[in-house]
Image (cartoon, rainbow, N blue to C red):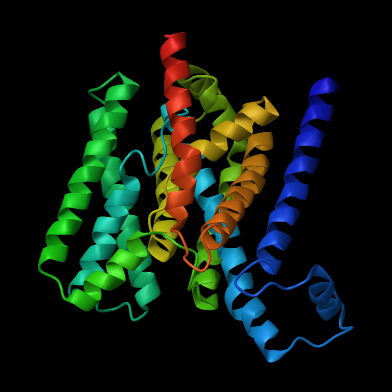
Length: 338
């Protein structure tokens, strides 16, 4: 009963904090809007001015929705990778997956390469990011078969990230200045400038994928209890591993394609949620991670926009300040237990 009460309280706290971060991002910015004006406008008791309408529906609301979607995607992606490797210090950024996506997105942004039968640049960028993510993950998996030490595997993932970054830098050296500026702005990571068309495409990709992850809660729980136990439950381990990697790469690639590489969210959020809820049950963890990931990116975006206003920090700058100490703490704790 105490455990159930704790979980209920955790969910209530997460929901309230998510609502708070949404409202905070709605009213805060270079031009502040009052809660009263916004509520009255929603209820139809007053009409938004043209300036208020543009700020809300062309800038802030799209940005809030994208922060929620991408925060969920990165957090669930990190959760799947941590489940796969059975280790809390792995994530899409640490394992070089985000860098691989950046390399392939850079290939399309910096060169004249196109995919003939695909007319939409958004779909082209997403496919490029997905291919880059999957190839980086494939390299990590190839090394994982020969390396038992997770610390060495993490270092290998970082090295793969450096190699991918070196490939991107090589292309930058020969690219057009305007294209380089476009890639640099994208590489900093930001929810700024997200259009409704990007949100629609992201939602079509992220929401079904996250629902599928939740539907896989039972096999995930069995997998966490050990591969032999999972096999006894009738789970095809090889196929299940491929599914985990594919889902994680799709979620990570979607974020990288539209918002740029964003670090540490995939590591910090799943672990902090697990510590808060004090459970490893995916049926509880997945919804909790969804709420935590959305709030984490919303509050990070708020700080990125407001700390040094009117100068805006990249979202990765804020998430790194929060996430990097958590990773250091995790590695030190693991070392102590070993």
